[in-house]
Image 1 (cartoon, rainbow, N blue to C red):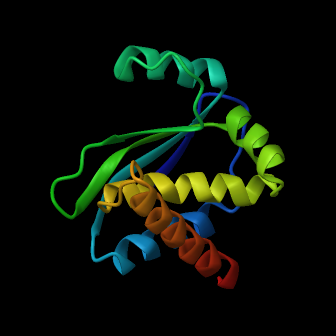
Image 2: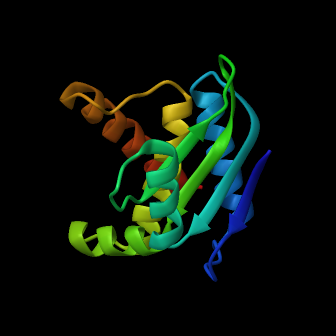
Amino acid sequence: MISFNNETDFKLLEEAKISKWISSIILKENCKEDEINYIFCDDEYLHKLNVEFLQHDTLTDVISFDYSVGKILQGDIYISVERVADNAKDFKVDFENELHRVMIHGVLHYCGYKDKTEADAALMRSKEDEALALLKAM
């Protein structure tokens, strides 16, 4: 089950469509969906989590807490809507595109993809692009 929660006044558009899209990516990766919670928040909220749980005193767009067991995916994905908006401007893409990329990025981590090396980051970006193309086709 995928749920969307807000710690700010942000409201995700087309929740049912986005949920179906995420579920389809999970299946495509030969994984099983359990409970995945998206929490939309602001920079301050996510910064506190970053410091408290990861000991990183920086702003970030997404933090994923992965509780998956094998290929049964579960976890909490916190997204700073402020950071996504800033990144969209920096990358010269629209907000929705950047938001969807960040959303699927967290799930792809749960599926086993990493992004610490250049090769891993390139594969992650390719998987994100495939997922975004699938969303556009829905």
